[in-house]
Length: 468
Image (cartoon, rainbow, N blue to C red; front, side, top):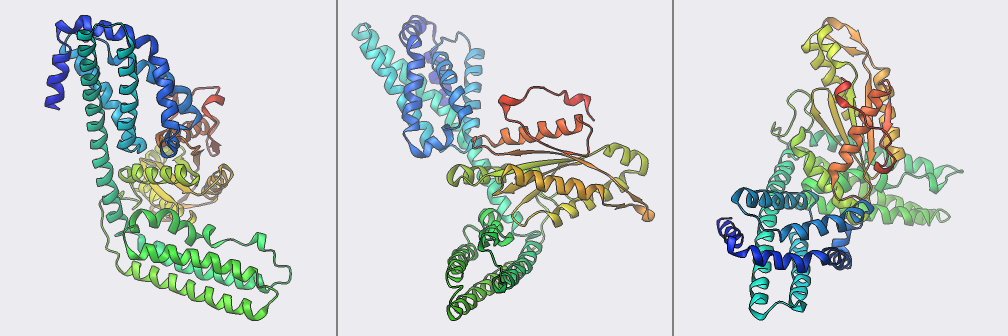
């Protein structure tokens, strides 16, 4: 950054005030035009369009880009103003890093802007000498701005990669054995149900739970990809999932031919057994580690939330595989601690964590956000499925007796806010929507589920400080 700092300070020298004014006079009236050209060019790139094609992004992009172009060519008279300018560019880079926008798109976008600005300056009535100085100033300040943006972006990228790697190490060494054993049982149950249903005279193939929507299929698609992607086990499991899918279609097309049907059923059973063996081998490698886990509940803590959310957002943008968020908060938990003591409050938290781990699907992720608040990331769902899962949790809580010390039993309830990721590249937006829905549920009386409204439909704002 030292070279960039020196260049920025030299550019904003008092001798360049007039040059800044000349460039600004030429560029500012065309800032919106440049922004629209930038937007059009970026949308023509299919990969870049994934990050820009959301309606909310469209509405804000042109205006924010217009303002940014104008702000770049404002003369800053002291180091404090220059530092504020750099902080803002650093923030822009942080946003790019957060949504996972490839650095190549950032550089390409700056190329589009520089090209349009150079064309405007060349077409102006500046003298030859002034034109050379103006082009030099414009290129220097845009290059320095890009350097600041990329430095912030690359810093976030390194952090993201470290967290992603740590997440893979952590996840592969804790609680995976439980998942694998549960999936082996689930696969056997799925195969047994398939055999029973096919033999039934009123069998309806439309009601069949596909292997991809089974616990095993969802786990391979959402969880295994995160921490086994570079391991041969993951490749084998994905190949087996594809083969199972294909074999099921062959079975359904051979229902009238008993010999063929039995042949394909035997092949499917072999594939299921192979998948079960691989899951068993993975379970044998598990070593318990604490890093990244909540020490009380053994759920994930906040450290890996961004890693999971980036993964789900990328899957959503690439394949249209929607995911959802459910944020759970225990109602009046302070009263539990005050009435029965913090040790018993911890007992409630542990039992709730066990209930969530038992009841959610193998492909879902559970986090303890802190205190009495939990978050679940559900992959491959619709808003109806999220709400159904949340309502089941809410109902289970109402009907569960929590065991305290001395075998004392109490009941507690929860409020839950849900939100479906709608394609926006900023996953924090989905978390905010679920959080707002949670506070709406508490505001409405607690012990209930509230689904997030779209931002444009939100009619009221709740003061969170008023709700405890």
